[in-house]
Image 1 (cartoon, rainbow, N blue to C red):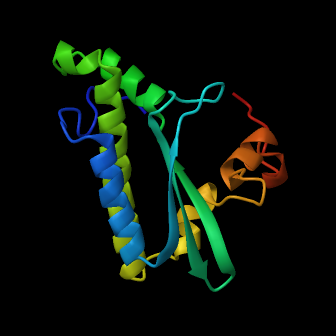
Image 2 (tube, rainbow, N blue to C red; image 1 turned 180 degrees about the vertical axis):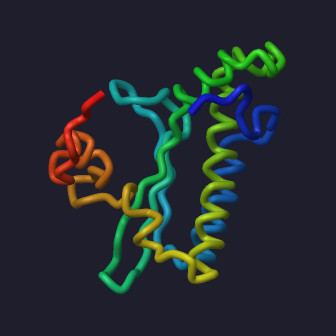
Length: 157
């Protein structure tokens, strides 16, 4: 997907404030535990910077754990490419961090509204972010298998 700009590119709201808003949404949705994850040395992400929010929630299938990561590198790349965004907002890693978390907040708010309206199930929306006992998400497991279990048709392009 190619866009000239990115949502919330001009935000000045700190990632930690946005994470607090995310936690409030999750708590209202029934989360029983919420964890803020920060980058650590020798791990993906920046040391000391908010990297993901994980939460547990009771479902009809038992308590499930989900992890919502922020791909700050991806947001940073889009900001840097966008000529419609002022240069001061394009070249800042801190700005990319703020933007990434605002996007997650608004995505989460929309998903929770869909769940509340009965349009989708919680598991349906968050399945890619579900974690196994080792902390690996369903999406990462499927991606690592190159989506083989889906029996996709060969690409003929």
